[in-house]
Amino acid sequence: MAIVVPRTGWGEESTGLAIEAIGIEKSFGQTHALSGLDLEVPAGSILGVLGPNGSGKTTAVRVLTTLLSPDRGTARVAGYDVVTEPMQVRRNIGLAGQTASLDESLTGSGNLVMVGQLCRLPRRRAQGRAEELLIQFDLADAGDRGVKTYSGGMRRRLDLAASLVTRPPILFLDEPTTGLDPRSRLALWDIIRTLVADGTTVLLTTQYLEEADHLADKIIVIDRGSVIAQGSSDELKAQVGGDRIEVTVAAESDLAAAREVLAHHAEGVTHVDPDRRRVDASVPAGARSIPAIAAAMSKAGLLIDDLGMLRPSLDDVFLKLTGHSADPVAVHSEKAALA
Ligand SMILES: Nc1ncnc2c1ncn2[C@@H]1O[C@H](COP(=O)(O)OP(=O)(O)OP(=O)(O)O)[C@@H](O)[C@H]1O
Ligand SMILES: [Mg+2]
Image 1 (cartoon, rainbow, N blue to C red):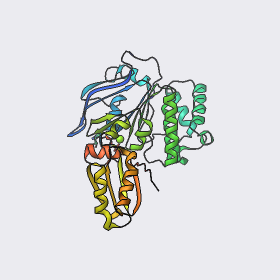
Image 2 (cartoon, helix red, strand yellow):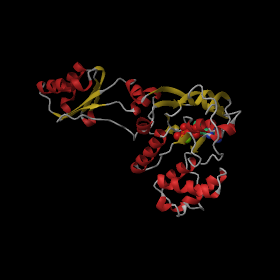
Image 3 (cartoon, rainbow, N blue to C red):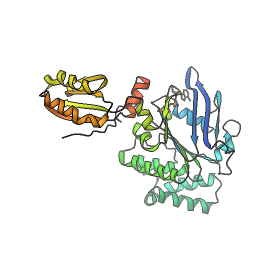
Image 4 (cartoon, rainbow, N blue to C red):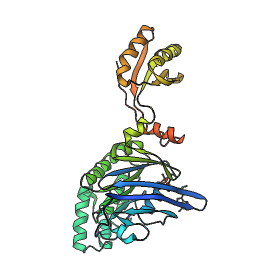
């Protein structure tokens, strides 16, 4: 989706914040899509806005990109107020929406040239910029093909390219990789990282915990239109109690004994999963306690199939904070198997 006003200057920069929102509220009838959203994004960094379906991500992006007026609260983007100075805001931002909005009747190149011309670039410059972007986004070979022949990943890349025609210093990406296969997702992550390395500020919404984990300098977790947690990925993970040790026994009949052994080394509740013949618990010493636990299991005569460390995922964080899972597929665990 293209915000089609050419870039000019940058507003007051005294705060060093490229994006700042304070107490944003927005309702649609009885639905409180945003209920006092606060966020800030220092210039040159990536903020990950993580939340499940309907948590208010797109509404937040629409308010910050001047497409929607807030009911209450204030927001500044590039130093400009989104309500009273929308044109100045638009001159400084790019937006790639949740669904790619491309002109199906045009080629890839045609779409980019059209955006350039809507941004009042002379045709020659618009064509030059389109060529550059097609190369940068690995679409050079497909530039002359109709967009209707593009795959989902190609569309997302072209849509992102369209948002960059005017080289905006601030970029809003609303679920840029939802629905993409892992390879296309990695390719887009690379592009986003390169943009930030070149100084672009990015606000990215995602339902993928792994995406926020990999890309964002800071993450805010939103649910029902307000921030329920924030910090770096590690800080958020620390909120659920650090590392866990997980032991799989060979025989289900050994589960109770294994639980007892593990409980000696653990703090808090020891979970038992009979179906998988597993026990797990939070262990203060983390990986350092693995040898002692293995030795104790062996001494108790328990045959172990697997013993490993389970690092908390952002999904665990989400579950703990909201009582519901964000994305059951994106479980991201690291195991340090012993054997
Ligand atoms: N134009 C609208 N009219 C009525 N309700 C709306 C409108 N836009 C959003 N909502 C509602 O506001 C809430 C937040 O929606 P929003 O699209 O911001 O969520 P989201 O976090 O982007 O979800 P998703 O992950 O599905 O994209 C939802 O309950 C949604 O149904
Ligand atoms: Mg959305």
